[in-house]
Image (tube, rainbow, N blue to C red; front, side, top):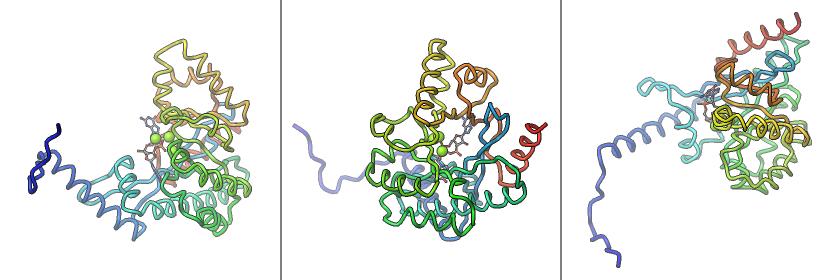
Length: 285
Ligand code: C2E
Ligand code: MG
Ligand code: MG
Ligand code: MG
């Protein structure tokens, strides 16, 4: 039989737990302030196309730096932003900066084949009723084609809110917005649900690439995965490409789109623009 705690038993916290609690609440304060004051920054990581031999798109990644805490990794502050209810401010900020980048890059490079920028959306925000309208309003305000905006959604978002995600995707897709399925291979896939949704690109999580390159039998599997998605009209993109060996492996597998430190780190927008433009000049000769 289980022993009940006596009333008034003090909670025993180790120093490590106390430290974690303090850090969390310090980060929550920083995130809340950043949400009020547009205190985030956007970095862009270019996406490489092996067939085009140039960067064809970029992913917008949120950055947050505090004077005292220094840079805070998104894996740490995004979940806190979700919990304290300010994730929609993060997304609004990122959408605005991403659309501004597209407008300025297209303006400076009118004949560019640069396709657009993808923004990460959180599972918790799909419950917002007017989400589609508010996103489309940002696109319209910047005067860019809707097809230049890509929305990254994870499997966990779909599992949490399948009907809301489906409705959002259909509404946005009708306007030309593209969708990327993020971190494929890390969730608990309901394959039938995933395959019914109109994803333009599936981002194979870096953990798949790691394990695939350690096992030669997986060349075939990885290749089938990439071509299987291709048959559905969904392009495969491999995340976390760090070495020439991994790139060669992806070439064997026929996976055209790649993102990773081998090609470029996430960069401030002006540096990303320069890197993308240089790749376009190289590809043209
Ligand atoms: P993600 O969307 O899967 O983004 C890819 C992450 O992999 C980024 O980490 C990127 O910097 C990192 N990465 C890129 N190339 C390589 C590589 O070659 N090797 C390794 N080891 N890592 C690489 P980051 O920027 O720290 O972001 C982490 C996660 O935080 C993102 O994963 C995304 O889930 C979330 N996140 C970032 N920005 C936002 C945002 O604006 N909104 C939301 N909702 N989530 C965001
Ligand atoms: Mg992403
Ligand atoms: Mg990812
Ligand atoms: Mg991730």
